[in-house]
Image (cartoon, rainbow, N blue to C red):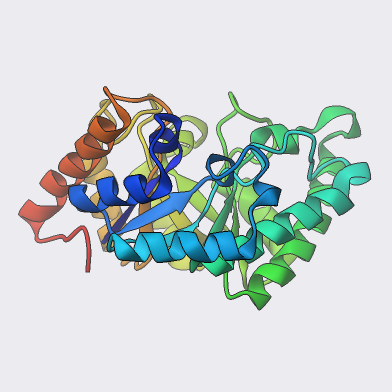
Amino acid sequence: MRLSYCNETLAQEGMSFPEQCATLASLGYTGIEIAPGSLAENPLEVTVRDAEVLREQASAAGLEIIGFHWLLSALEHLSITDPSKHSETVAAITHLIDLNAACGGDVLIHGSPKQREIGVVGATKARRNAVEVFKRVAEHAGAKGATYCVEPLDPSQTVFINTVEEAVEIVDKVGHPNFRTMIDTSSSGVAESISVAELIKLWVGTGYIGHIHLNDTNRGVPGAGSDPFDEILAAIQTSEWRGHLSVEPFVLSGTATETARLAIKTLREIMEPSGGQCAP
């Protein structure tokens, strides 16, 4: 299994991007997943050439940039549910897809709960409006060879798209091979009616799942709480998942580096006794 790490907590502690890559590589990660807001206050000012430099810096450290997440978190005025903001939102996402491609990434994760609030439009119109945005960005993602994933988030973050089943309904309406959903083990552990391990067994083999985030329901990394990551990783192996696994913490266990170290130590201790591997 290929282990990656989401970069924003490292960036928040003042690490440059090359320092982030060097740190993660030294701990044994093979990939880094970028939050665009960690690159600039306004990520739309980041150029394709800037992204190419990031790819070179990651490669020099022995890492690959696997993709982007938290796409719109630094762009709070945008919305996938408010049609008056659709043109600007699609343009922004299109630029992020271009940056992701220049970085060498092959997946984009659309979480961004604040930019998918239902507001006054109501659930039915919000869903219809979001589908229209996703149809447009899925087409561009496909042209760039990337998979665009809508992320189910738990109800404490948003009331719109909380479960994988709800996300699959959106995926079916979008109807594009480069548009899928994903599993975030923290949100799924809160929002789903079945265990995360059962969820993985149910959905990973269906073709709907384009990515997996590993985190505890306490919002920390694997090992920071009591979630059964032995069962979760066993389910991932049983399902023959071939994609990346990205650790995404929201709560730290010490410093950002110490948190990344705890995560990979925990995952390796689970994987290695059973013959599993954290990297190809």
